[in-house]
Image (tube, rainbow, N blue to C red; front, side, top):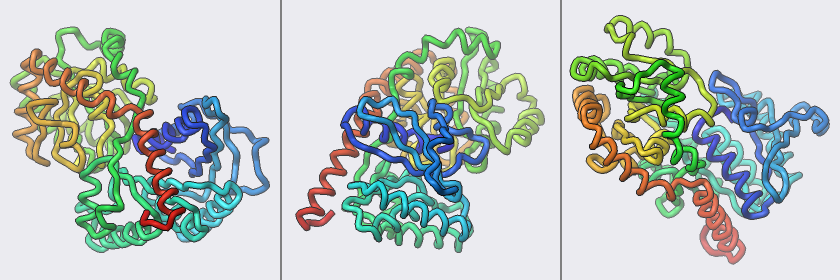
Length: 406
């Protein structure tokens, strides 16, 4: 449960099921390893040593604000992202024990590792409804061919061990079907929900955030929210910034996030003479993201692969237009000429031109931002997402109980 979009999606769904539907929910997860930070800690969950349940694999956690009860969390130290046969066997054993004790009607898995282990165990235990959400494919064109094929086959195997799959974008369904993971009728698109109200009120924080980073009221801020990591496209953005700065000297680029590439990106910015036009905001709490978007005028998304980056609908709901590479689900929210501009991947010239067009035209920014807010606010409410997911749970349970196809 590192700080990230898929993790926020999962936590919102768990809490909504408790608070709005009266369900009993348990979240099984592993340690939040890495520089992104722990979403559970940031969300106010407490670790209570008294909740230990007789095994080093399981440590109870509590902390839901739901009226119907608290979200039970099973923290499994062996449940980790990287492939490790010893850890993975131990995690599977612990997951099996937790599911057998909880006896759920539904097991809903997320992420590649969680999806593989969770679906395999839940299916073998005969859980009435086994569901998986595809946030992004674990196989992609930037991997070595053998690794890509291995992960594709893992996904195909795991898909045969669940009743239905949720895609966070139509593009994810298209990719999975095209790759032979599962037939199209096994997928339903449900957009990843969020708390939209802070983004609707994002501009209330504009002056405060700009003062924090010494950004003048006359500067046009282009923001990017992403880990400073491979395939996130920061190098492309910095290259495009050369042309943007020449034509729009008052532009500033605000990079929100941290990661292993910070040092190399800083060197690239310095070598191009762009130091005065870039600000690194670092890693911030999810609660600070709306305020940072409020300080921006445009959001740019140059990741080379992503299911549907949450930053895109977040910016649009805040009334900010977006410029994005045409990857995966981006085209489902970034509509060229309506809510922003969609750019061919690695087309630096078109990326620069799109940014210049928005930086130079305030009325266009407002027009596209308003359209994005009107189109996507209700669609991305987390309550909307959870209601749709729960309807799917009930449908699959009813189909399986009656013996029809799930």
